[in-house]
Image 1 (tube, protein in one colour):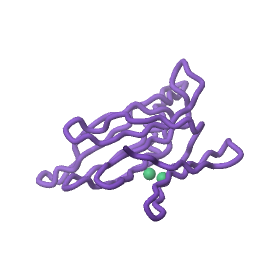
Image 2 (image 1 turned 90 degrees about the vertical axis):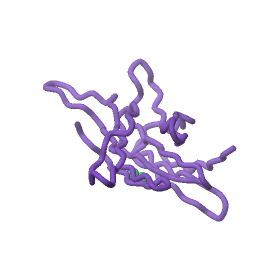
Image 3 (image 1 turned 30 degrees about the vertical axis):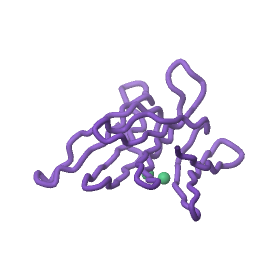
Image 4 (image 1 turned 60 degrees about the vertical axis):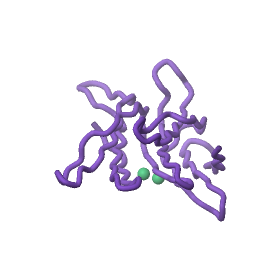
Length: 143
Ligand SMILES: [Ca+2]
Ligand SMILES: [Ca+2]
């Protein structure tokens, strides 16, 4: 496994660590469709346990952000899923007992990094796309 990013975040009294697994290496090839893993810290045991797996494609960054009392993560994919040519990055919304649920896909192309930016009451995701001519700013609208 090649871990590209570790993202630590807190929701209420829960502590999470998401590991972006970029690729699985076998003897003669690498596979970019992997399961990236979100771990939750058990304070009493002083260790992280697996909380949830999300399917990712050459993921390079996982970014946590919150808007009001809603919590999100976005996985920045650099490769398309098998059988597709389109690279999308996926936003997951935290739904409590249902954990992180796929909420939205951004057709940003190969994306190496997302950063969350808040400007006054507006929320943005800055997407770094090394192959495109410019990087993009997405305005986030929540309902
Ligand atoms: Ca990150
Ligand atoms: Ca980032």
